[in-house]
Length: 337
Image (cartoon, rainbow, N blue to C red; front, side, top):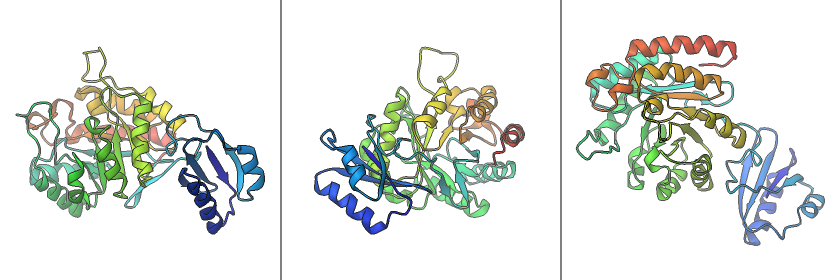
């Protein structure tokens, strides 16, 4: 159940309203919008007389019953699009944000070469894996703490905020100075980790699990938001199907569904979504066309020698060409890249 508050509702009255419900045993979520704010009740609300509350509470404009299990991420609770601010840039309405960089941080020169190149081409954030979850225990597992240090060094030189994947809740302290914490597909339902990043008060890029439904993705976002962190960015990165022509099946219809059902920004990962370099650019342009808020693209200065995911990585020249095409299309939609 959600109550939409009047625009001029005093903070003290809102606090009293929330406390009254919590004293009755309900959990609450306060969602603040630019025009209206909302209070969402979580619990068994079947005995709550919705009409009576609206008629007798002067700070309540109207109320709705929310039947979906996800509350905080629900567009019914928060009708306006959420805009996630990262440094001087915002991900959300009116922008198309490109996050780019190598799958894994492999060394100082490699990372700096890529960081300089993607910034020159127009990327807004630098991605790079320091801790790498790999299917094989013999594959490159990342440079770990040293990789995080190199990302921060690249940020200091280029000014690009950095995105990197956290593997478990014991690593939270290591990520205190990372701008965006990524939850990878394999950890989408690591609920203890979701609760921890929910307490970190920094943007979280949440990737869809390999075989997860959209409701499961939204419920994972709910874990983060219900723990106190509203800065969640959803990521469609392809799901596992019977099709073998591509690494995964990139579900671009998910972007439309998520934008209808949630207020959170949605980005697309065409690199993992296809696993094939030649498909990254076409699917990137398709993501822009269906209304995604951005991309996360793998770029390597020498893909043939990449220690992970070289087959799906663009080189700097290919990435620059893609950015030119995206800018031309975004201009038609009056969206900033």
